[in-house]
Length: 312
Image 1: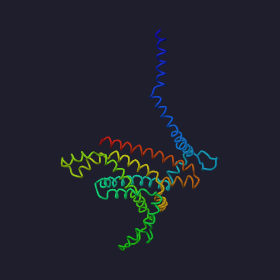
Image 2 (image 1 turned 120 degrees about the vertical axis):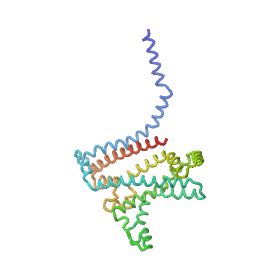
Image 3 (image 1 turned 30 degrees about the horizontal axis):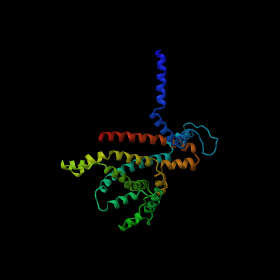
Image 4 (image 1 turned 45 degrees about the horizontal axis):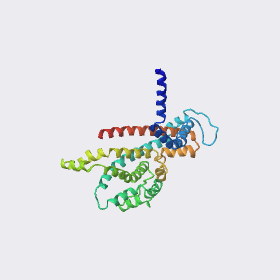
């Protein structure tokens, strides 16, 4: 009799679970997300898996007749100075731009957040620097940094009697110019991002600190920076992910030169995989690049999470 009475109860519980409001809400959310999941699988996950498979072959991107070559493509990457140079500059660019934009954007945001009669104009001016496409900015600065005497930078130096400098024809100078232009573009946009976080800091904290005798610098270190931690995490994440996949700015500014000094990973992927029909090698480079990006991003999130927890 006990078993007979337990069975209907169990069935009613199962029926109640299937017809519960939470389950219906979850299913409704799933059906809304299903198109996004399908697009992600078709346009991202499947191509990634295909690239991983092709990285072990000599596939040229056109012919269906290709052979399995094992780790040969990966060995080529670690022995090719051109590809290694692209990896080195991409990492230098990503970390360099992230560091300098963060260091410059925070003080700029604090300054622009103060009450000034030209505050709106100043904010718009700095934000406008990031509005044009990077390819256009690269072409403009290519004229400014022209190694010829007709270049804007060299014309300015000529006023002081200094000779023309090959800004884009020397390895280290070319790297400096690319990073400089990227920082010049990004500071205003990320300062605007920090301003949004600064406006959410309670004014009472500064008033109490002033009463306690804390100076401007002490307030900046002990109030502003800790309160800006979520903004710093967001800004650095955007800068790092954008820096690792950079292509258009270095390509239009220097073309990857001189030599391969400003060559990027994305440029190598396009040149080797499509331009030179070495799809297998390009797929191997893309696989390594994807793994490196995931590791860098997870490392950054771990560090940022620890810092945010420290100042929370």
